[in-house]
Image (tube, rainbow, N blue to C red; front, side, top):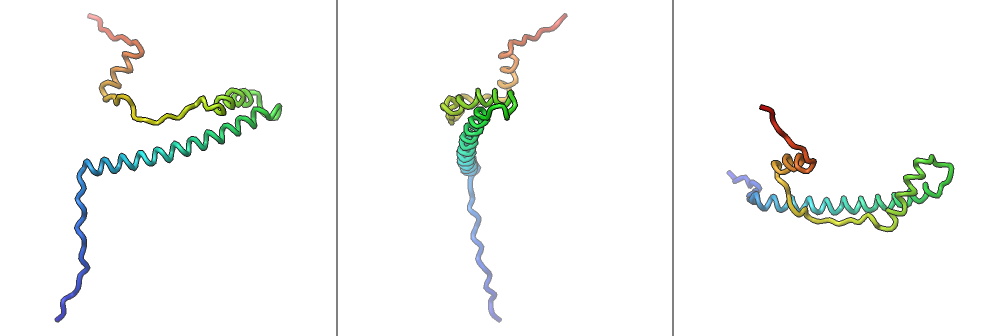
Amino acid sequence: MSVAHLPLQSRPTIVSIAQRVQSLQAEARAMARDHIAEFERALDEAVALAAEINSGGDAYPVGARAIAHRLAPELADGSIEMRVGAPAQVARAVEDLLDAHLQDHVRMGGFL
């Protein structure tokens, strides 16, 4: 009787949770960079469209021309600047809840 040859299965690599988190964060950053590049291309297209509509005359509604008139120079001169970085401070859920009231100067009180 011959021995059947079974394919050897490699053991799965054990990855720590921290390594997995780092890997996912790196993947998310790469995806964000791609998304920002896509956004910049869309802004470039918006500059061209706004300039065309702005110079299109009476064929376009007044409201569309007015928006294009304001947007075209702002988009073209680069006054919308893309800066990507980590937030200075990441707020906790409790801070978000409390800051919403404190920033709006909402005061709470009770009656006795």
